[in-house]
Image (cartoon, rainbow, N blue to C red; front, side, top):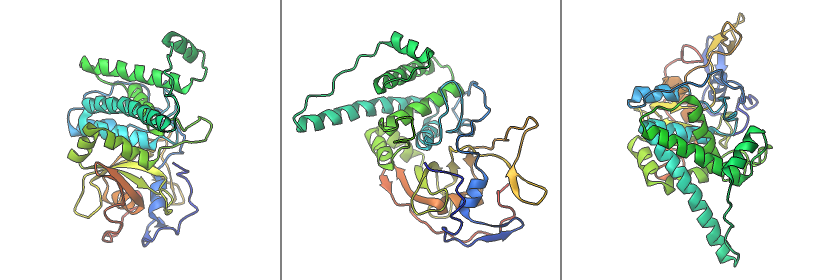
Length: 337
């Protein structure tokens, strides 16, 4: 995912600008008005998330799931929109059991990738990849010392974390926000396929790999199909190519437009300054006021649809069903609030 704060492409969109009380904004400008800085961590502290049995409970959990959350598992960062959106899909589609199915699918996907690599090596007349044994005690010592982990150590640590969480959920206990962040980060590790070197190279997740992951897991594909979920590739600056993943859920009465969008990029509440310009709302201590990540406002949904470039769902990776929709009624403000 690239920069979310690039406002240099104001004229890239084809939609008519609306003339409201705060001037004319394009879809990408309205979208970026809602975003915090791409690496701003939220101030949310680790806490229990509670049950995820009903749709309302699941959406309440999704409302505070952000790719930017900073906690004991580290900053999810600007590149992890895809893994966070995929994790949110598991929450919406199955609650805590959905998260278990997601972790099972992630661990199976890693095994499939290794088998695929060995098949290619065999075709080339090369020996299979060596089995790497990781000493967990030594790994824990490296983590405590703040040392970098090898890819094999990262995989061993991630699998141990996910296995521990599955055991906890099997006992009927609820997840914490830190544990949800751990799942998001491990999904990034799996879906990125080891390309991210942690130094700005290879960051992000390819849409083809997201589609391959869904295809590899009948349980996840069924979850997407049963809940009418789609991973949307959107262009946050209105450009031709996409740079951000969101989760689209359901359809309303406009073809291609979703009932709900879950956006993993931290969204903030907005207000107007003394000159009538949009600005970030602040808490008394100076921190930003975070908004819900679950979007249901009609005008906002229209913007997301306009900025969608492709979709990933149980049927694969494909172009969106529609890129145009009827012109809405006159908007009252640029924030849909």
